[in-house]
Structure formats: C-alpha cells, structure tokens
Length: 129
Image (cartoon, rainbow, N blue to C red; front, side):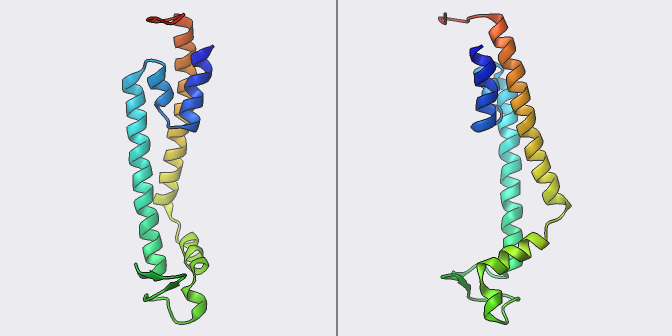
C-alpha cells in the first residue's frame, strides 16, 4: 500500500518519473524526467519568444517599455497590453507543447500508480519490513 500511494503522489506533485524511480523502475523514471524537462524548457523558450514578439523590446524601465514596434501611446506600453498580445499569438506548436507536457504528466501519474501496485505486490525488499 505504501508504494501504491507514494508512486503516483510523487509523480503528480513533484516530478513525473519520480514515482517510478521510488518504485524501482529507474530507467523509466529517468526517461520521464528527461522528457518532462525537455518539454518544459522548449515551452519556456516558446513563451520567451512570444513575449519578445509582443513586447518588441528586451529592456524595461519600471512597468513601461523603453523601445519597441508597438509603442505609439502610453496604453500600449503596459504589461497587460503585452500579455494580451501574447494570448492572441498562441499557435499550434504552443498547444502541442502544453498537450505533450500534460500527457507526460498524466502518463507519469497513472504509471506511478501501476508501478506502485507492482512494488507492493512484490513485498518488502532489502531491509524493509
């Protein structure tokens, strides 16, 4: 019962793949951790590029932009304007990244539960009682 709860809980709340490592499936867990990390980093790069496109500049002073192509009035220089522009520029690649990240997370949780049941059925290992 210990691993049946611990496996999916770690995969759901900490990092997909950690539950598999705790349950003894180290390679499977490391693969899930690596895939999650890669998808997350690519998603961060995509968000940074979307922010750069929306802002039109890299430099901020307070809450206002110093330079950029969309800067004609003061209302276009605020952070809410940039976030609105970013939300309008969502594309298929962004959706695939988010969907892939959620899919890996869900698989990690379900597989953590399955591996936890297997580990509990195998009985105590090593010095455990």
